[in-house]
Image (cartoon, rainbow, N blue to C red; front, side, top):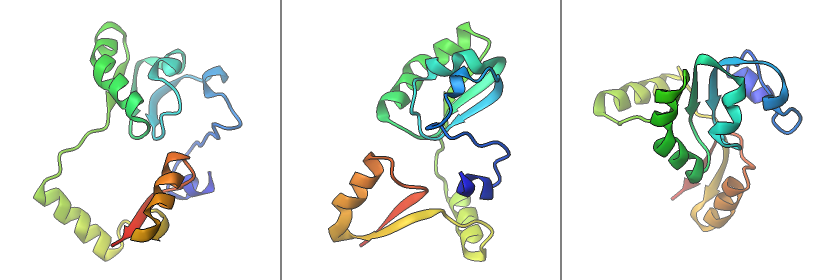
Length: 137
C-alpha cells in the first residue's frame, strides 16, 4: 500500500482487509489492476455514469469484459471496458526518452535469470509481486 501511495494514489484500499463492495462508498471510477473479483461484483459501488476499467488480472476476467463490457455499457448507465493500447513507434520513442531521462521509472519487483523462470512465473501466478518481474536473458 505504501508503494501505491508513493506512486501518487490518493486513496488505497487493502482488499485483504476491506470488502470494498460492502463499504457503502460509491465510485466514479474503478481502475482494477488485479481483477480479484468479477466486474459484476463492483456494480453496486459504481455510480451511474461511472466507469470500470480492467487493467490487469486473470484471462477469465479479461474475456468477461470483452464479452459483456459493451452490453453492460449499453444497458446500464455505467461504462465497462478493458485498458487496451496499440503500440506505435512514436509512443515507444516517448517512453524510451522518459525512461532514459528518469522522467518515469518502472516498478520492478525482482529480476530473475532465465534458469529461474519457473520461480518467476510461480510468483506471478500466486500474485506475490509488486510491480513487474524481469527475466535476464
